[in-house]
Length: 247
Image (cartoon, rainbow, N blue to C red; front, top):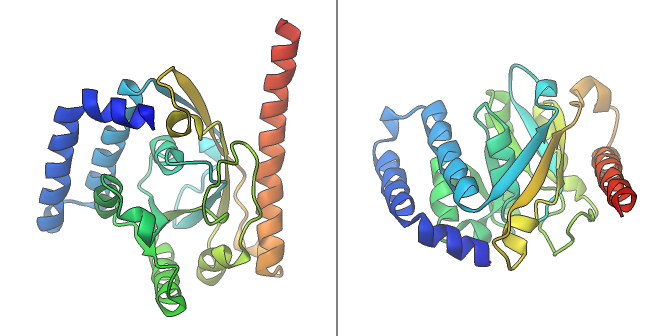
């Protein structure tokens, strides 16, 4: 949390400007395309990364489907997760986020800017309506980030079980699934420090509908989780080996 306060303090003029900008865009949405909104969002993240001493390494961006909508499913570590993926993902995308968390200061404005979807976990009827809305958006070509763990619990680079229901958006839209492995993404806002940190975003090989159409949601959840786990194990294992060799 220390880094959040530090970034907000030294970036206060930018924070105030972009809060105003987000409000202006909301009132004059007809003037701004999705690409315009996304460009502003990524600019905000770039300023935050620079002032917060955050570096993000990006792997596998060339594997992303070149056209059409798809759903990115990532492990969840903390408040930086969505920001890291959006900064790494050059084409416009947005996020499905827990409705309660989405109302936090700055987060609310950011979700509005990206026209993200808020999932109300207190109402099954509202949840299904939101999911069906996202399905239609993905069919129309939008790209979404979803965290199938349902939340983060200070798990760092460990990965919790994936909720099979989170994959309904991809299944119902028959869209590609892009597993995304996040490494050390908890560090920017999960450590009580402003020391420079490095995170990693790995876009893995897409899983196309023909590859998973015969599978149920539980099998798909296991498949995506296993791919993410393998990547985290590979890169975290190599980090440990390098650290041991340097001693």
